[in-house]
Length: 53
Image (cartoon, rainbow, N blue to C red):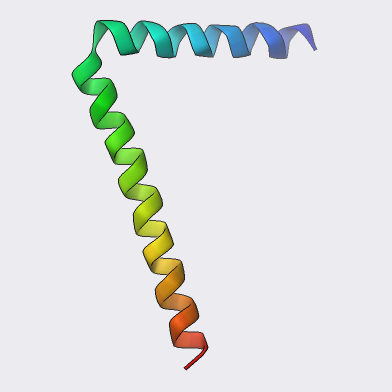
């Protein structure tokens, strides 16, 4: 349980460090994640519309 807590704090610290030292790259990474989620949602919508027609 302690290892999980330490790993979580380390991950949060890394994200904060990355955000403050490379804000442009961090914004690009977030935009990439959002684009990926949107693409996945579009693909699911296409799948279900094809199944239901």
